[in-house]
Length: 396
Image (cartoon, rainbow, N blue to C red; front, side):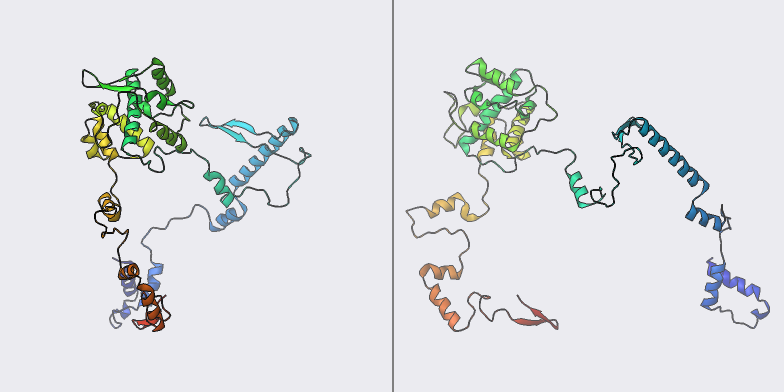
């Protein structure tokens, strides 16, 4: 039962004489006043009187005054220790209960440190939450370096063959030495020029269906292995300039004698190599992604059993965003056998057609003289005031 109904019932019981003559209705004001005085919870006495709680709030309790006295005594002891050390202001090293080493600033007392000058302004004092405080802490922390280049590297079909040859030779060299092929993505040591060694290497299919690499000299193989570290340094990063430099040098020049680069449409013979090892295929994809920022879909990855299939997916040009940029339309516009066909980069409007025959200047001049709109909004009276839903709206 609600407290208001209980109070109403209590009022009726308190006045039994008038219960027979007075109406059963109790006004809202009386019910509200009775509800304020009625409590369903049991009264609980406070631990301290009200005047004592207010005294502790304004003047402090015995415990707080005792803590202040202890703190003042410790400060006096530290000042005395400072005087015994000759007024040294070097920070102290302390270890907390969690084993962390903390730097505690030394106390500077004017009575001990005679060269200390007390400040009279707030200048130079660190302000927590200020713009300078936020800016100084924004640069802290670990600086992350992206795995991919910021922009995609655009390569043609022949350059993709050169790059895949370079990456494959590096990965197979690591596999031949018994190392993890994933190390092909690690930063290179110093100013390594692996493309000079990989360019003279030849790829051949092995008897067991794998791929083998043959170098012109043993020095080339040692150069590649020495340029890739065996352990990844914690601070090793590859900046964008280094990755772009490797791609640029890897796609220049020619391959070794006997490794043709094909005709740009079909993969050469050395690309007809089976990639039956998932680790090797994944290492090639990661290194190519790291160098060029080109991704392959899962469908393209699963339907690429050979190196030539990977090359066909990489070398396929991207779909142009506009129809006029497609190669068939570009060839159609430059075909001398059909000179009456023109390919425009955008949609042709009636104004463009009038401009092509030289009538637009005359039409524009006549429209301006008659005070008519030229293109809809570029004449003097085009921007007018209209009424919309009873309100005046200015079109601008």
